[in-house]
Image 1 (cartoon, helix red, strand yellow):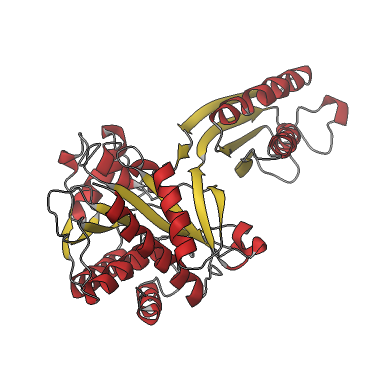
Image 2 (cartoon, rainbow, N blue to C red):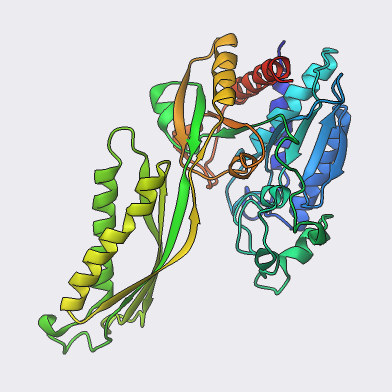
Length: 414
């Protein structure tokens, strides 16, 4: 069985045209541009022979019936929303490759035993409402009332936004799908890193998905005149923050050796009063730590913080850290990993195992179904930027493997 590689590529190109014209490739969830893209996708699903519906979490679901209606469905999914100015293939490839895999089976008159669902999850990327993976969270009962009450800068509640795009937030207090409702979930994605490209390997079999811990950190010093305060009398919050950031970087490099996957980033920094001639009084920053090892994740920052607080106190400064969120690592199901490996071999493609350093809808789907992911390379590992790029062959490779894995799972699972 072969897919229609040209049609897959044309569909990727077509969907990418639904972008804010002044900042490609931007299709933010809940916007008019996003709805236009979804309308196009719905028509494409129907053309492929799938029936379509929106669930109460606002997920667009296309279904191809199997020959044995009593079996639970096989599910392929990802997302078509983007971050600002980035995401021509991020998420979109997983949805459209899933659609092509199913459509080519339909055209070849190959009917699987299981129903197959292709899902575009609502708002996987962090949204203006403050959270990511809105649709997959909603599907598995992980959207709390507090989250539904989050507001975007214009004042609209997330719950009202879900209703606006066709969902029903009132139904999200319990899971829409339970354990056992889905036979298996598979997500294809660009790697968003350089490992596959640098190793010249076309397929990545994802072993696990990192957990993410985030901390809000304040470094408190004292504002003084930058020209008249001697160095030994300063309580410079920014200098102390810089030392803390460097300590975080050093320890992350130390702990990420061998098979340990750990990265730590301070990506946001606010300095007060932020004046050229004033010693910084306060620094606000956010630390993000990612690892596939729960012990490393939990124990990485506390000892660094304790030492930093001791150092700061000797200089008359203070450091306050508050946990913002704690997400645990997600292992991919052994069964799905083995089927992806077999599918890569069956299509003649070299594969390697790797950890996903980014979060995905698969994290939430793993709560209710055997779940796995496969990656294809992207150019120089670039993602979440206008330069994000893949080749037609890379897209084809991923689609062929996902179709082969789909057929294998259909034969294997009852």
